Length: 142
Ligand code: DQA
Image (tube, rainbow, N blue to C red; front, side, top):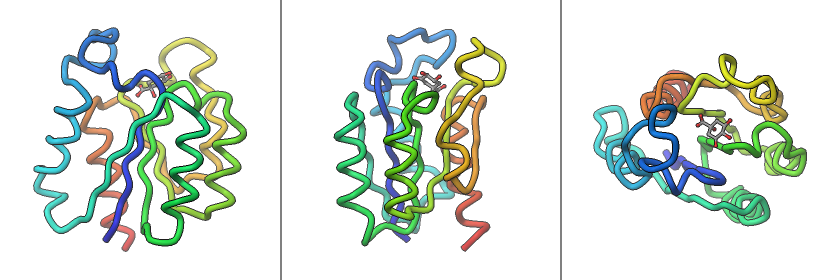
């Protein structure tokens, strides 16, 4: 099963970016931890990070035909990017929304996810474990 794992704006700075909120692991460390996790052993995982909305949308377009599922931490794009929302709908990629932090217990603007309704699930508030929750949810569905 092919799964793409996408991280959006500012997530390249994980480890140094507000570690009290997002943790002390870098994105590379998190990606390696996911790759080596027991739940992921038979999966074909591809990781992508970009700070640019257009590059993430282009990547979804490119991958739409040979990908089974998408795990997406869209960062702040989550809260306002209708273009990203439309790309998920347009590509029909089965997408699970993920966040490290609990977006419902922070600033009000983070409580809105404009991508939620086009995603098949949402996991947040468990740090890097949120990505594994998303993978286990996908594995239960297949
Ligand atoms: C985030 C939450 C977003 O509100 C924020 O803009 C991020 C990271 C998270 O993983 O907790 O960049 O998606």
